[in-house]
Image 1 (spheres, rainbow, N blue to C red):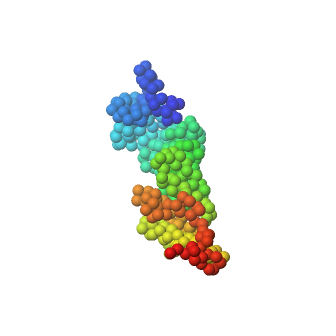
Image 2 (image 1 turned 45 degrees about the horizontal axis):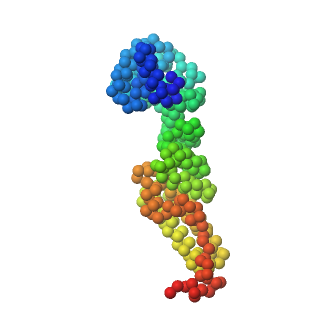
Image 3 (image 1 turned 90 degrees about the vertical axis):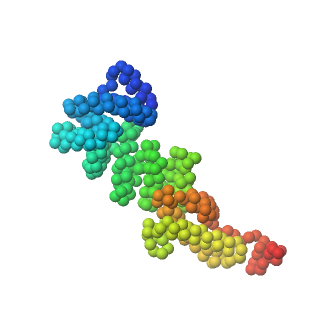
Length: 354
């Protein structure tokens, strides 16, 4: 049971098989054994064990004063594709709680999770969120990582759908702190932090995602470097240069803005290298580079906030020729004039070329 709750299914399975050989598996244990088989992708064997679990759980659910038997029976039906029966079991269980026939103490984290999951499967989101909230308040993520991952993931996605970025950040960040967040959840955490203006936090979330799978983490690398630039700038323009909110721009408009800023910065840098400008002109160039850097970074972060399948930042930056502006902060600096090309305001004829 301890191994199962920790998500160490291969090890748990070996012990379940010993209990199976001894005829010592009841309904809930049969379900858990079947789930271990599911993780091993042994579909035929899993189905056989699930059918036995259903028979044992049906009998147990009739007299069980807790939600355990109903919880596993509903899940067993669901995994067998018997969705009407799964719904019936879930409805009977939650009605029993609502009528007071079954008691779920607020401090009983596991039972709170089970009730939340039953409401979740019935599509009763408000009730599910209420009981998932109670569950995660008491569940130890080191003891019940699967339950915490499920419940906090649900609460985070629900908050995100309601544009409650503060709540979404809380749940995603707690998953990240417990090392339970997936790459997709770390990506969502980073994007939520961007929405909240926490660019340093976004950088760290993307870096954590990168560490989960370094060979396949190109998106995370581009994203955390963009967040790093945003953190260095401190603030970003709230709207695009034409006054529209960033979210109103199309993919093509964002790509055009990125190209435009990169091209203009290169023009300024070329001019700075090629002419002896006075201090006022050089400061004007620096100010313009910084403004354009803000537009570039804001457009880039808006770009990566969209579906990466249609907004692939790595490919877009590579073919646009501005990947160095993302990865190398020094690429945004104003260069000094080429040495030897100018002496004061007079050109050096020996360096003028043919």
